Figure 1 (cartoon, one colour):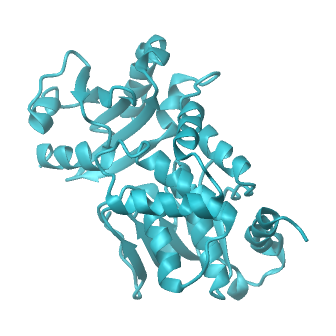
Figure 2: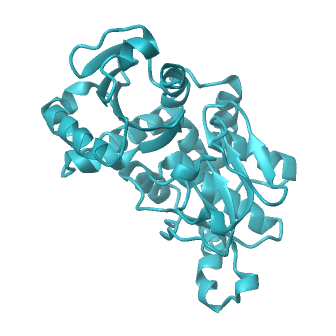
Length: 331
C-alpha cells in the first residue's frame, strides 16, 4: 500500500491532472492566497482545496506568483506538490485565504464568483453579489482558521496537510513570538504536530527561519517583493514589506540597496513604502521608511525616526503593530 503522504499528495494533485478536460461548469473551485504568497497563504490554500474536495466540491489550490524558499522547504518536507501559478480567475469560482483585499487578490477577481474566504486579518473591503462562506478570527495564522474549518466539517486532516498547516502557524506567528499569537494557535500547532508526526516543533521552526532568511543571490528589489503587501489606507496607497532574520547582521550590507528599491517602488504611485527588518532573536524590528510625509513615524508611533529608519523594540507584526497605527496617522 502506498505511504499515507503519497496518497494525500495524489489526492491534492488530481484536480490539476483533470484541469484541461473539464468543461467550464465542471472546472474546480480555485483557492488562492495573496499576491506575494507566503507559507501561510499557500498551505492554507492547499488545505482548503483538500477540504472542499473531500466535501464533494472539486477544488484546486493556486498561487498568484512563485512561492518563496521557506514555502518550497515546507512542501518538500511534507511531500506536497507546488500549486500551479495562475493570476487570472475571471469566470471562475474563487475561495480566498489569508486576505480579503482587492489589492492582494487576482486583478480580475471582480469578474469571478467569490464563494468564500478564510482569514485572520482585518476585513479588506471585498464585496459579493451572493452570500459567501466566511471564516475569520483574530488569530496568529490563517492556518489556525482553516484547522477550525476541518473541525467544523468533521473531516480528518491528512498527515502532509497537517504538517503544512503546522509550518504555516509557526511561520506566521514567528514561532509564537509575534504579538498576534493566541492560545488557539498554540493548541492548533500541538495538535497538527501530532497528526503530522513532528516531534520537535522548535526544530521545525528553526529550519523555517533558516530557509526564510536565505538571501543568497537575491537582489534588493526581489527581496523587497518577497513579502510585500499593498494597502489602501484612507485613500493613500501604502506598501508594507517584511523580512525576518535570526539577526540583522545578515542584511546590513544590503540596506542601501533596499532603500533604493523602496524609492523606485514609491514612484509607482505610493504615498509610503515601509520595510520591516525583523530581528527574531531580539524580538524587534528596524523599520525603513520612504514616504511623502516625513513625520509619518511620529504621527503613527509617537517616535522620531533617525533619517530613514526607526528602531522598534517588541514589534514583529505587520497586521497588529504597523497597519493599525498607519490607519490612525493617515486619516
